[in-house]
Amino acid sequence: MKKLFTLAAIAGLALSVVAISQPKSQNAATLKVDAKESSFKWTGKKVTGEHWGYVKFNDGTLTVDGKKLTGGVFTIDMTSISVQDMQGEYQQKLEGHLKSEDFFSTEKFATSTLKIKSLIAIADAKAGSNNQNVVADLTVKGITKEITFPAQIIVAKDRVIANAEFSIDRTLFDVKYTGMADNLIDNNFKVNVRLVAKK
Image (tube, rainbow, N blue to C red; front, side, top):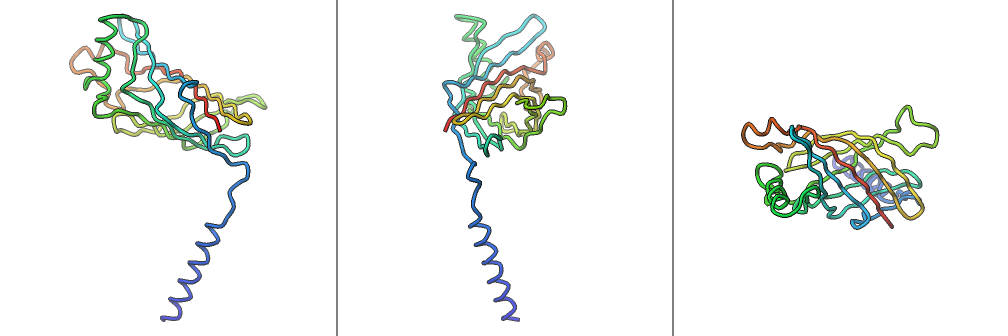
């Protein structure tokens, strides 16, 4: 019995060594998100109109294999929420309100994260198209939900450029304004994302 156990242990160790020594694809690479060249625009609608602004990227990486994007993860600095369609006192009040516990609670949840799980070619895309559906886990206020959205992804020699426009249901992440006024705000807010990552 002891001999069998020893043989099993040796076999397991051998398999582990083989797995570890498997070479990675020579075309695989990790690129770092360039926060200065990337942008994240938000637009929120309400009964009386809409507001829009930006949040800044904290950091992130994208992984590629040859000319194919294989994954990635990046974080957004929620404390950087800005409002661009207003100025002065009203701008400051709305920015403060969005950062408060009524909305994104940025003192407790300073960042949001998106982790790419898989990419699926869009069925009706033309041959050679860069359009793909991205399946990702989005974490906002500590709540993680899987989302899917279309994106145009270009993998070049030394960089990846991704552009996407999609909507997020704020209620899935407990982004709710206290009181009846919440009913005056559209549940979905739109985001326009441009992501640039470099070697």
